[in-house]
Image (cartoon, rainbow, N blue to C red):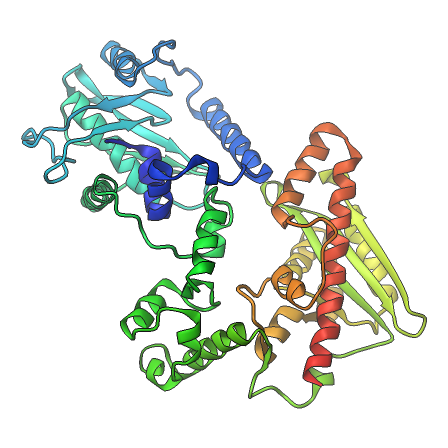
Length: 493
């Protein structure tokens, strides 16, 4: 069995993913999404920028070798020469011994032997004794994340273990370099024991072929290439992870109560669950399951009677949605759908920055439009629009009084929905809610991440087809918000 850095990273993110990567049918994998390709390219750009800024005089091991052993030997040769910085080195250790050397704790898993493969981005020379002489090496991992996540630290400890084994020293302190190119040393006193536990659990799972249970988590699972495969299993099992609000800890508690399906959760008394998760959460989970089983929406019992106060209306209303490029910290499309009831007029205004430098221009165009209809409520979905208005106001020095007045007109439909109704959905995203009430996007199966890729392609190619696709998607988001607002008023009234 081969234990790799990628396998460890997958295991820390999702045990089931690591299992399927070894044993799953490749034909059941999703095709790779464009957004993932973009992230991979951004990661390569980040690595290149880090090398340029901090380690421009690196050396790479000799290429052309076909086996991991030969590639690792080429890396070791550079270490023996005392090269200051090695890029794309390979660390390989085969048949880990039962008895670990005195200088080194072992990665050995009880009753099993396995090979280890690690490919740290950099190996950096430092003073200190090793089998090479009066110098040694420590590994650096370069990641696109903004914070030093546990999975990064586990893999960094894995590299340190292999480097220590190779140069016959205690594991050197590994370093993480993240998105802002900040350097984070990893505390091995804390993370080596966690690495050993993780290796033990991972290898036992793989060697004994113990397939982990399905648990669907939208944020974590959405970009995984096994998502469709796992989701189909979850649906066939009526798995509780499909119920919004069922977290891993709540799931374990429900299993302990004998509640194993959505239908059984719908039949469970909230009183029995309230002792652990509280009365409010217990009631909400039970009603959520009931809504899914009966495929009907349920009105919250504490819903305020004044619908007009909850959802104000006006002859002219504005529906607002944003498309952004997080990597550039850019909000490049501010979409507004203007709806005038008296004339049944609907006009979509896509304020689109064709270059990042045009963000300030479309911000002013947006302000000119919304300020032309000062009595019009502005409907949106989620907190992002509010935070973006604040950010753009600060960035382009819009008077604070003008921003505050504008925000008093904002109405978050996500908040209105979740506090007034329970719908038979697996997620309270705009797409999930609008699809259930009958709205359809013109481009099916497309999400906001695809728009990020489309905009990136527009900047690279100048092909306006990408811009047209983004505008169409954003308009559908605005119309879905309009559709949802009308449905909610009708349902609650």
